[in-house]
Amino acid sequence: MIEGVIRIFTSAAYGIDDLAVTFGLLFAVIWGLSAIYAWVTLPGRDRARFFGYYLPAAAGGILVAFAADAVSFYFCFALMALPAWGLVAWRSDTKGRRAGILYLIATVIGEALLLAALMVLAAEAGSISLDALRSAMLTSPSGTLAFALIIGAFGLKLGVIGASGFLPLTYGYAPGGAAAALAGATVKVGVLGLLRLLPLGEVTAPEWSTVVVGLGLATAFGAALLGVFTTTPRAVLGYSSASQMGLVLIAVGVGLAEPAAAAPAVAAAVAYSLHHGLAKATLFMGEDVVRAAPGRVRGIALGALVLPAASLVGLPFTSGFAAKYALKDAVHASTTNAAHLAETLLPWAAVGTALLMLRFFQLAVSGASSAEEVPGAARVVYATMVLLVAGAVWVWPAKWVASAAEALTHVSSLWASTWPGLVALALAAAAWRLTRSRNAGALSLVVPGDIWVLAWNAVPALRARMVVSEKPRRRIALNWSGMKRVLMDADATLTVWSIAAGVFVLLAAVLVWVAT
Image (tube, rainbow, N blue to C red):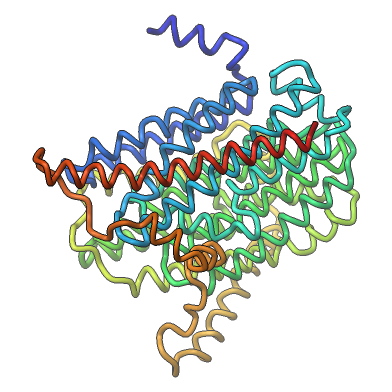
């Protein structure tokens, strides 16, 4: 078995480099600890079904970090994304099924875009190596088309503006362990894909750079605005993920502007992936613990959430400070107008993140408690994640960590990372005064999923065909009535998958036809 694993990773299909080690370790830690959390929190009768979805998704989600050619990357990407449908649609009520169907539709559209991009570049490069595909984008007459397809494919995974509602739906109805893995790891595969396929450091492409930086800024601020006015703690965290990934897009865009900015841009994208992956997985586990914890334990669990929340804001001495400092170095290294605009607006993006975290705590404290208490072992996993948030980034052997540590000795850097939080506190206090005389839901204006849910509601016939039952899943005896119910459920499920597969094949064919 060991020899087989060695052969896999020494073949041309898989390889080990700095990106592979960084993302592979991040993915393995998050998927692994989330699996332990899920095992100890799920009822025994649900574990087999849960891990039937979870294990292939985790395998694809870890192996994708080491993929070195188009076939292995696409296979691992699909192996991660498609089984995750069962985690997203875990709840069998109307909202859970709706989330699963919308997730599946978005996923197959993203995979169709990715497949078309890989096929176009492979045809131009005469190779399926990711390095060859990246180089082909520079000389191919279809390079701009491939760039657009790649941004579209991974933009859906990252939750760019317009698709930001996809993330709250993805996390909102999954069990706690699954939500932590999906939020902490699967989104970062989008970052990895951009770094693997876009020619950062190899091209001067100001037009591409402006597009990506513009998308990043719109996502960072637009998703934050949606999250502040949404209705549940998990939805806030979902919009927060989209907003933070907007900052990663800014880094990627800066790296496309000129080769000199590529190295700090890649460093910033890696820093954000490490910091955000650990912090967001911890927040989802913590939200699950807080909702189920009694009395004093609830207060302790809630207090522990302050650290990952402060990290997302980028307060001094947190992992977010290191990530934000790396991003600041990246935008400062570029001379384009888009980078200068981003540098001016980045502190205000931190204000938006701080408002999101305050909104998250408001909803988490006032939310209803779960009927079942989280076991002690789950709290241990949660505590482990908190410790990783506190120290993992700071001990990572990278130049950007040393630069951030040096910045902690400068008063100007400390103040620059502190004042956005103070502004957010002032704005939150003003909002509380304005709304305290009104009902408690004065800020609850955005339904989790926003335009995705509006689109769903606009197609009642499709909704009625797909959602065949709102009754919870239960064990079914092997008699005729039970078999009939099984077949009906299977028919509904296969209908969803056949529609998704049809969309995938049709869209991929159209995109490849346009490319040729």
